[in-house]
Image (cartoon, rainbow, N blue to C red; front, side, top):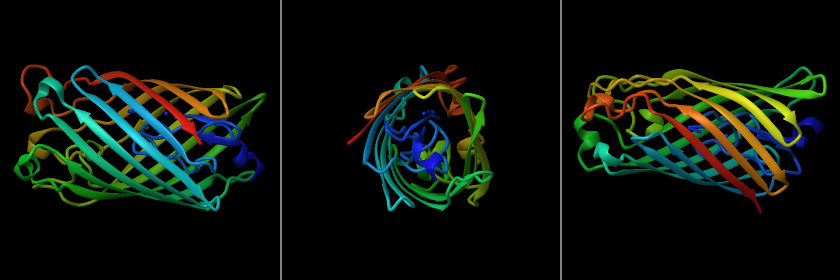
Length: 271
């Protein structure tokens, strides 16, 4: 319990950690975790707000989020995502993400923290697009996450594994399900972060994705390499290089949508 209280984490399109006297960091869907992966830890008690920006060249994604923990067991969050398709031509896609997680087990010697989480998402995209590909405009993800911090000499290593049940296309940006596939699939998400010191974490993440082939568009897995710094108890900064694969590449002209890679930046503060 003492170790858990001393550590609060995140990144995305990206994962970090910090001591309890510092700001937490937020996953792109609004909950405590890495940039693209929710973890089994909660934000550090105080309400926190974050702004995340991802630029892959063809697209930009911004996420404004707020989260808080209740009774050291429950985490509540809300994120407003805006996906700007730029020259691809679908305009701006907005996604509301309402999140809740319950910590089933707290971290202890030999035992990871374990959390069950829910993310309900509502997507607002160009009129007619979701109907044309047979996708729904709302959906709910369920996940189980396990997180453990392992001492390594004078440093610590954070390891996380998450199993998610989802119908989401591109985490919900392109709706949920399709005309040919409308069932939940199980996906794996993993993170590893090494504390270089009490204020700095370096790590990697990987997130598998369902491939519902909406409109003949393939979906690829996401990954990132991140660096997080916590200058004081109120602020956290996250820098990452994100690889989001092809996004709607088959449905847009020229080579737009292919090999979407770029910078992920986040600033977060607690109140």
